[in-house]
Image 1 (cartoon, rainbow, N blue to C red):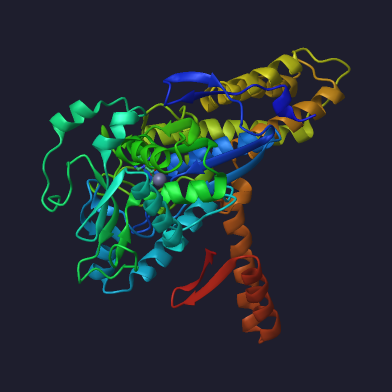
Image 2 (cartoon, helix red, strand yellow; image 1 turned 30 degrees about the vertical axis):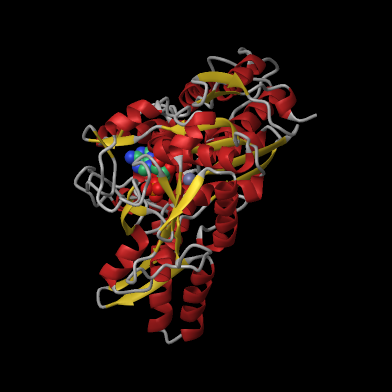
Length: 493
Ligand code: AMP
Ligand code: ZN
């Protein structure tokens, strides 16, 4: 018996605008696709928030016993500066500015993305496909859409015919837009003269001579449209219809709307049963975004080096800060918010650690089972992590009261409480005890400083075997010693 048989999740479906009972297509299995990053710059904290929301969803589904295939792509081609098919490819532009190969840009920022997500204790997705690795699938998809009469070629580029599609299907159903309104509101942009209508979007773009990221196709040497890659990869790995598709709110239109249109045009089926959209992280009242300079990098949070914060915060504190807001609510990034989260996080972790030393009695003076179900109810209600956290603080109150001797817990319940707290805190929220985390931790620094001192003594005594052993063994566990003029410091790898 799996937990999901007793715990019914409700998901807010952006398509219907309602919370719906979650029923996967195949009993016990979940297919989930989340749009990944365009790897042309370092991920900022806003990007991290969206991916964290889906990491929490992934963790909870797994905890309930679902076999989840979680696909999160890497966009390494086709994403132009402007969503309306104009401007330079973001990766090619970066490559040009830095005078390196586009694939060097891709490699650098994919590694950065993985490092940052690891630091935040994300679970890796089951499959992480790249757009450039699926050019053939994208070309095949375009051929099908053309054959079905929903796309046309002009001068080596292929465009999706939105007007034709809307005659039989509903373009705009996800973002609640009507084609007439779009027609009214679309500005003519330079370089779009090939399109029959400005609302049409590119499936394939012919590459200009200077465009380096190009592939042969039946229409031209060119590159695929950004929306197409997600359709090609989600279909390939999850099928023509799958359970959950996620991404940030800002991707709803045009990106996700176009994904639906492509799938329906190619396969005649609407691809996704539950569309989930995570809300934005804002700072100074504006969306955190690379393009406006209104952003903060995760590494700046860990080092404290940013004008918006007064000190460094550990990844778990930043994670806790984000999960204290519901994924569909806007979250305002502030120093005070982080300071408050740090206090709360420490109180929670102290209580979790205190569970190891609590004295059990013969009876329990609170209803453990009821509390536990309240924790599940919170997560079942569209992954309501702030309510879950409020419930965890209910338990913190009891733990502290047992510690003070004002309430009691039986040894059996103590084991159950500990197990439940660990499940929700570590497995589902993905938090880590900062004292084991190695970032901003005084204990770790003191221990390594002691080893550095012992190594210096060994060197002074010409015991190089010992000094090398200390350096190498530390390197083996990911702590690198750096000898410099001012002495020895260390970095964590
Ligand atoms: P990009 O690499 O620009 O495609 O963005 C990657 C993901 O981050 C997308 O799902 C975006 O919706 C999301 N995102 C971008 N800015 C923010 C923000 N300020 N808050 C939350 N998510 C964001
Ligand atoms: Zn996508």
